[in-house]
Length: 257
Image 1 (tube, rainbow, N blue to C red):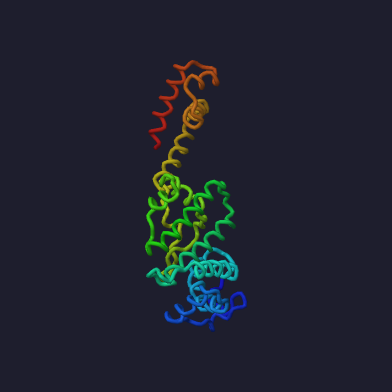
Image 2: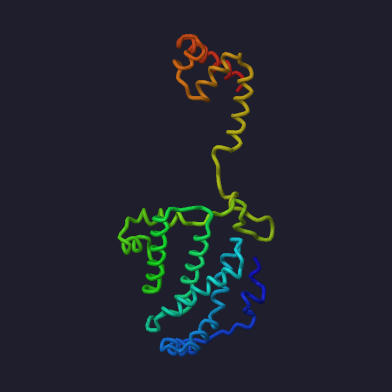
């Protein structure tokens, strides 16, 4: 995905204007009175915000033109809903709305299917978050969001987790100029460490030293999870014999492990 190309959706990004605070205030006053030209000038004068936001999503494999268009929708919503009387910079208000719009787009195109009820809770939670950010000029807590929705905090957390986009284990998370650190490098697996691997090899080698009947008994008992009585019925011997053969086989295996 090429973020740094000059033209996105027919817009020459190198020529985008930068509005000063006073210009922004004047344009907002005019736009709120219904002047379409002032609104369009506000949109064009803040497209650099959209460009800065979509760089955060550069590793998603999405077309930059699509993300830019979706981000512009978030920018327009921010412009239409911005309150000059609030002591908040427009960029502080707009960026979360742009991010929210892009995330909604990515979730709707997510290959992992999530139930409608969970999605509804998650979308409502994100809308409440955006509103609280605008009202309080800070990031709200999960408990505040849950209180606004009238739901338990755990349910909100579960819904938000359910709509997170999956990432590749081979996605780089850090690169200092050398070999990158991937997501999989940060994940531990106690089931596949060297000790477990060596133990499995040792068990396989020890099993080779047993007779066929002993192998069958241990396989039924410890790999298929059957009881001694079930093994006895399958092989056609008594439970006492199974118990004796099992103990002898395990004792014999310990010599080779």
